[in-house]
Image (cartoon, rainbow, N blue to C red; front, top):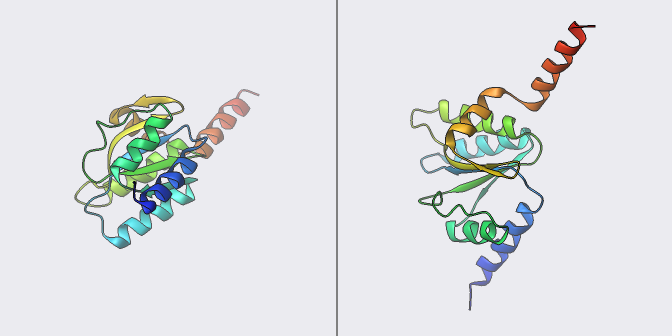
Length: 146
């Protein structure tokens, strides 16, 4: 019989993944507790959530929804869910990686709006800026022509 704690974690993970169309798989090993706490805060401000769980549980939860990330789930992994602003959450991850000399958190893969993407796409998404700033630019361009 499976461990009851693992069953509870898997149920919680399934619930968190319900309705999420964008998430990133990252390697967080090497971050101090303070850095991890700051990263969680920055991601939360962008409308995201950082979930640290066992790779086996992450893999089970993702495969149940038809998403296979078994190749990216090697070593310590965390899921970063982006409910509101995928580019903003990617930028928060990128800024955190640039903020330390180890380049951590390292992005292993992603799932953006229903499509699996590689690391380069996530990095390009991070360079776009937040959804709010992109909408502001669009309004500026549209109003300039009036």
